[in-house]
Image 1 (tube, protein in one colour):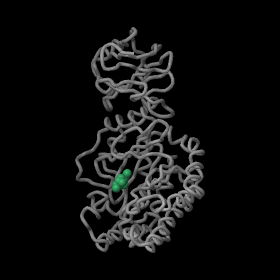
Image 2: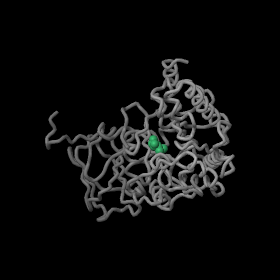
Image 3: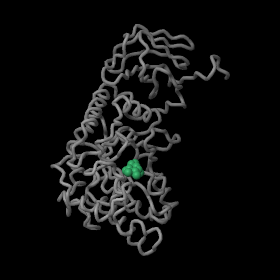
Length: 417
Ligand code: GLC
């Protein structure tokens, strides 16, 4: 199939395929591999220039405990996540599934079992959609680098890559997401045979969503380590580390707080995007306590405030709603949700709202809020002195309006148009 036909065909089925994903909002990324044993980032092999023969030994010393994927799934569910994406093979080249393409895999080496199978079973048990991350770049395969310069090596490496993708898409039942990563050292879709590879994946998994990292735009964009909306009409998912490393890195002190995670989720929802938040399990598969703590808090908060987050939302940031010093918005239909993260005390004033407010309340328990609205100012009154959200210091106020809300403040105190 030529590229143009492929892109056209996938565009036709995209809205339908994307539907569940765009309502899901929040997913768990899992980076797990041999590197977890070293605990110094998943790029450790490359950054410390560990020779392949030395690194390979990690394949025999890796002995994860029984079924850690069930722990991840339990936590994901509790945190309000709707899907999980796991590394089936990271840049190090070690395959976590029962592959025929190489013996450098979890069944034939240390773990002695199919870790992808366990992951898939856990997702199904906990009703989470299933995503496979697959690194195109491979530091272990003998042709992984020389494929850039040598035609025979490239053929062998593409056969290996396509063989891996075929197995992953054939042997584990319904898979929802194929998440490619780093396309070094080949430089374009043609060199990677991306159309052939992904058309094959789609034939095996007609509902599949594919990301944009095999040199084709595909179904969604993948901003990394920043939550930035792509252009309206383009689906996107921000992937974020929890502590600056994707792989297990216990020495990192840089854990994001539950509050930061909620702010990222708000930004994602306001731009009609998703957040894929990473955990890097320890070698035995357990989740670092810092992540468990924060995700548990996030889940408790979402239990009370999920309405402001999930499902089809409208674009808020920069398009319909303005910035505010005390909070930020998500919107849907005639409802506006104000995520107040700097609590002002007894009164909260919102300027420039261009819709009549019919009702105001605390989202978490429905308690009504008294208000007065004039042309330019909405004054919410008799509020508590201190932020009423004990979980993360983010209180959502729901405004039911008489029309789809918009907010216009401009830079001066008089609007120029
Ligand atoms: C980067 C890193 C990789 C990580 C990925 C996640 O591409 O190279 O280690 O898996 O980001 O998005």
